[in-house]
Image 1 (spheres, one colour):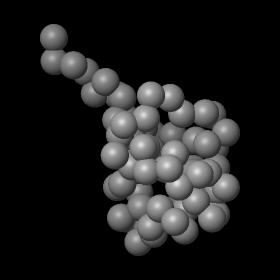
Image 2: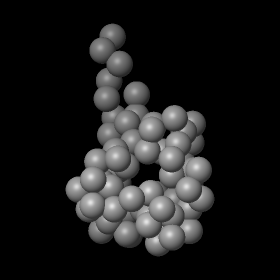
Image 3: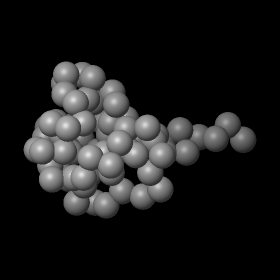
Image 4: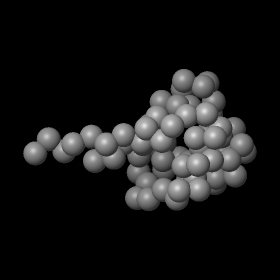
Length: 69
């Protein structure tokens, strides 16, 4: 399973989804789905914009967690 750690990044940087939306141009509804890990796919351009705002690596935003099989 792939975890989206957007909520952690927002908390670490004391930023809300509305501000991130304004800085990236990503729709608030799209960010909300990422925040709650309900999204089915993420565009590479969106990853790029989020990483640019937070000055982070992809690993800081996405994490692979084995299913425990």
